[in-house]
Amino acid sequence: MAVALMEIGQIGVLVETAKGTAVSPAAVDAGIRVWDIGLEEQIGVHERNTVEAEFSQPHAIPGMRSYQLTFRSEIVGGTSAGSRPPMWQLLRACGLSEAISAGVSVTYSPVSNENSQVTVTIDVYRRVGASVKRYRLTGAMGNVRAVCLSDGVPYLEFTFLGVYNEPADVSDLLVAPPYVMAGPPPVVSATITLMSQTLRCVGYEFDLGNKVELREDVNQASGYLHAVVVDRLPTLAVTPEEELAATVEWLNKKTTPTVGEFIGSIGSVAGNIFRIRAPAAQVMAAGFGTRGTRGVRPLNLTCRKLANVGADEFTIRLT
Image 1 (spheres, one colour):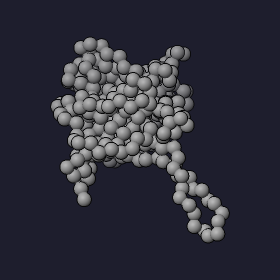
Image 2 (cartoon, rainbow, N blue to C red; image 1 turned 120 degrees about the vertical axis):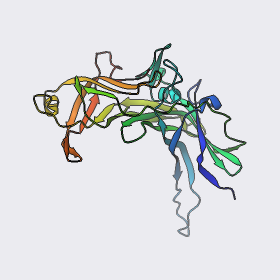
Image 3 (cartoon, one colour; image 1 turned 45 degrees about the vertical axis):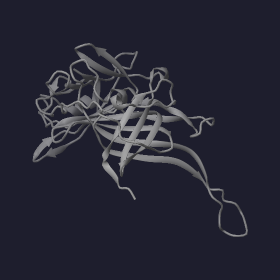
Image 4 (cartoon, one colour; image 1 turned 60 degrees about the vertical axis):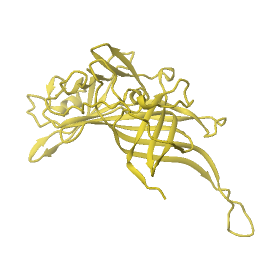
């Protein structure tokens, strides 16, 4: 029997032309460095529970079927300022729009209207002996967390929900995906500020906070049509050192309540500078803790809308 090598594989992702209709990611769509891949099938199984002469029961009936896919990806920009990062299609499928300023930046902003959301086909390839096995999600959408901490590689953590497709054997992995050779920016010489205060901390974490559901459709073999983002609540977590009340008191920001700008920017090389900006961050918790023997304040923030029109509570930008 062949051996499945879990450290050899790929993920290919491609935006679908029609939501829920499979497309085929090519090598150009697979240049994403990932790890900690987790794939979970979610197939309903319905017992028939008939009353007969014995306790023995007939076979169960399979029901609706989907996949949940999780993995981590390096935070890395494109080949130059204003060029798309490798994970751009994944970000789009997290309910984000994309704005490219040639030679300057690529910016991702939240969208709420289902018509403005895009779905993706995601192929997960795994080496099994001399061949390759492919698992496919269609109509997939998801959520993303950004973890930018100085004690590790900055990464994006994705969770996708998509329509189940039967696994298939393919001849080989995709040939020569265009991996960006530059590594992710280290989380040093960073800019992390909140309400005009420079934070002495080890970095920050951001959670887009998407709620994703699958649209049921009895006409489909899987019982589902495609995923959709139905709600979101973006949050931030950062743990600055304790300060005098005259400098800043975070509990006061909670009781007032006060909103203010958060900026978390890492990197210094053009094209590989990653920034999350929340113009109206609100302190929801201001705890007490220690880092070593020094006092720190674990802060939980919620990204609020800045103007009545909304969809402006944060941006993700690569420059």
